Image (cartoon, rainbow, N blue to C red; front, side, top):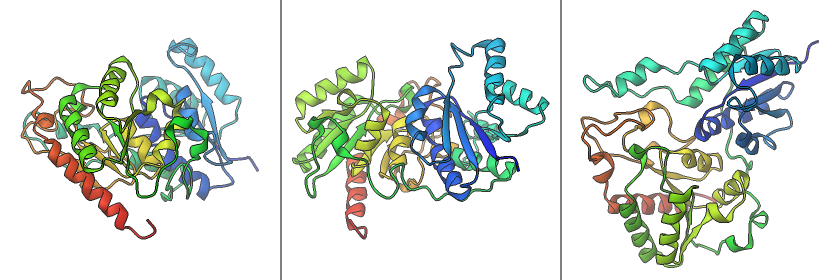
Amino acid sequence: MKTEHVLIIRFSALGDVAMTVPVVASLASQYPHVRFTVLSRGFAKAFFEDLAPNVGFMEADLKQEYRGVRGLNSLYRRLTAKHFTAIADLHNVLRSEYLRARFNLGRYKVQHINKHRLGKRRLVAASNKRLVQQPTSIQNYCDVFNKLGYPVTLTFKSIFGEGKGDLSLLPPSIGQKEARQLWLGIAPFAAHEGKIYPLPLMEEVIRQVTERRPDCRIFLFGGGEKEFETFAHWCNRFPQCTNASQQLHGLRQELILMSHLDLMLSMDSGNMHLASLTGTPVVSVWGATHPYAGFMGYNQNPDDAIQIDLPCRPCSIYGNKPCLRGDYACLQHITPDVIVQKLTAVYQRQQAAPGT
């Protein structure tokens, strides 16, 4: 009998790949006799290398090593040598479509994601908007496996199983968490301006939190020159702040620290999804985008999303379109008080939960 071996294709941004983890982990648990191999960019290895015994990872750089048709043909030959029995295209863009076409010609069992583009276009239409919840990315991923003959029930809790990551693997500067001490993560940046809460307002959030909880620790997440300049200013002003991304080494260490946070405050960004993979509750801030597009973090409470109603909102699925009003009122009109109140309410809810 031929061993079942499923190839899972998902490239793109960090958040999109992170959202495959709950699905792949649940599949691996429910189908222990099936091998699952994830094909993605190199950064994603940290998600899958220790996820389950029957989950493997293959790295492919589509912009360099496997560029163009010739490169994709080379990648296809590499993949066929693995003797896959089914192909799950969770990306569904031109390059994955080409690979899919070749697998179809080879008479492989192939299915691809439905991104529900029409519903998303109606969600962001300038007029006659239809504010209807679209299927989440995770549900769309599940649907692919349902069609392949692997119906999946989501059982995933955390990338660290029932526990948390090992803090001893982190730099000594991170230290150990004291009893009842608040550890708050803040990821204030995103790929596009339409998803970034104004930095002066975020600084006011930090001021209010540190005044209320002087013993708290705030870990700042984000990479890049602009981010580090902002973080340096905040760390100088607020001794409770630590630039976590500067001190940690790699995605795996960030996940370990996130698993010990009481809360994460983030934008609609990759860090929302990273924290979700560790079972940490996230208070998320939404501007040009909207949870109805299907990109809410896994297992997060929709009530913990902070947003305001405006006739023009949402105006973008990914936040990459210029503001129609020119003032980003969707973000500017969210007051720091509202965010701090939400953080307080979610923290109190967590503290009141059984077993806390």
